[in-house]
Length: 158
Image (cartoon, rainbow, N blue to C red; front, top):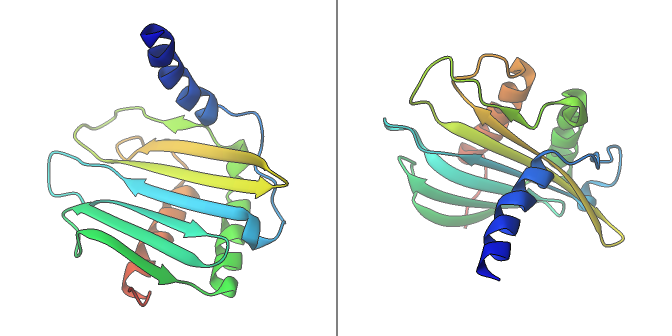
């Protein structure tokens, strides 16, 4: 039984990353969740996770090398969220690879970028693992990460 649990815990993330269920775009922003996670490197890379929900709630958790460690909650406007969803659509997230992990340089952090869409109990999503040393990832995708990163200083955190 333990073997089955171990195997399933390895298989489920693979299927999520390679999901054939595309994220429906042009739907109400309320149905989306966007998550950006930055991982560690051997240097002083910031390590944190930020989740943006369809109601405008933003959850941040800083782990290492960030201005704030721990959890914070903030809010963005529906207009800002709508603009983000349009930018995700313009990057054509459904057509992107699930992984950009070619190691042309070493000791770089990764970004795990997830877009989920929930409607009528059905969750569809796209998860992208982007090793920052891989030069093949689209620049527009990395600009999207940077846009989300810039919100840290703009949001009124609680």
